[in-house]
Image 1 (cartoon, rainbow, N blue to C red):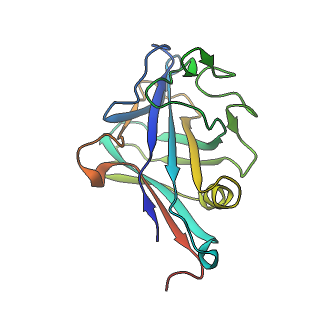
Image 2 (cartoon, rainbow, N blue to C red; image 1 turned 180 degrees about the vertical axis):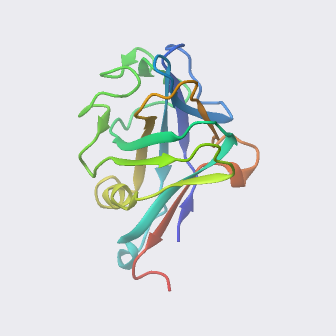
Length: 192
């Protein structure tokens, strides 16, 4: 069962649109009606033998830094851009001088793909502590294995406004490895 941490991650902030947060120890995601924070993550799956290339299930596990009093309606889509730079990307740009089609990496069809494999939604309950699993990512991971050399790129955002909502998760830069984001994949025909 592969468990991988991101090779890069960042969060994009509408209120400080030129700032880069790629070296931050946190990933912030939220929307309070005016300010939006979205997250982008990229994972590289290990090379898999031909007999072990069918995904049974997959999930993204994030560790909550600061519990919030509101629920978190989330959505995950495939991030299309392979050339985004972790330490240069911002709300406005995926690299210096190269703007996202729509700020926040929200250009459907050019920045994100809501169709292939499909978007995934859910709601994290209020006051969540510890880890939270974003389930049903098997199609995203299967698409990466079949079409993208095992590279899984995800765009995660809050799709409904909540007053005062800002959800903090530990990033790949956290000093404690178990708190870093993890993509956990169960493969068919490979494991008991």
